[in-house]
Every structure is written in C-alpha cells, then in structure tokens.
Length: 109
Image 1 (cartoon, one colour):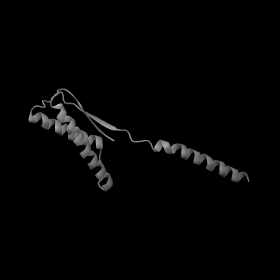
Image 2 (cartoon, rainbow, N blue to C red):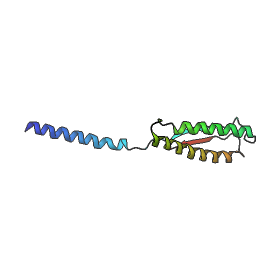
Image 3 (cartoon, helix red, strand yellow):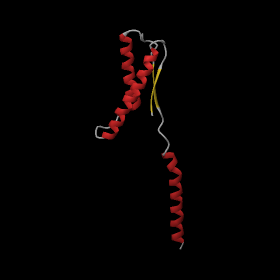
Image 4 (spheres, rainbow, N blue to C red):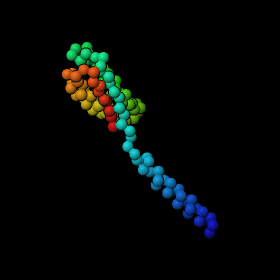
C-alpha cells in the first residue's frame, strides 16, 4: 500500500513538473536583428549601392542562419527567410537613397 502511494505521488509530481515546463518550451524564438550602417556609403553612386547590397546580403545570411546539408526542410526555410528578409531590406534601401546616414534594420522571425 505504501509503495503504491509513493508511485502515485511521484507520478503526480513528475506530471505536474512536465505540465509546468511545456509553456516555457512553447515560447516563440527571439527575433534576430542586424543593423546595416550606411553613413559611410554614397548611395547616389553605383559603387555605394553595390556596397550596400553586399552588406544587406551578408546581414540576411547572418540573421537567417544556416541549416545542415542533410536537413532539406531546414535549408528551404533558411532560403525562404533570406529571400524575404533581403526583399524587405532592399525595399528600405531604395527609400534611403534620398536620406544619408540612416541605418537599415534587417530582422527575421
């Protein structure tokens, strides 16, 4: 009888701990952010725009991370992330052509 009560109590404690831990595991991943500085670039020139685009591509790779070669779904997710992040950042960079010294925030969820 005592052994049965101990098993029930241990089982209840383990279940309670597991239920309490589930919300912690279900929290969304933090948003990755990278700031691309443009103050040193002359965006009115082709060379300046090319340098900015290179920085945006590097930031997109940094923000979206990488996946293992064998993880096809992960690699597709990373590729999709890079495409969407880069499209958004390039859209912001076009708006920057008229303002100098502004920074572009590259972010992915």
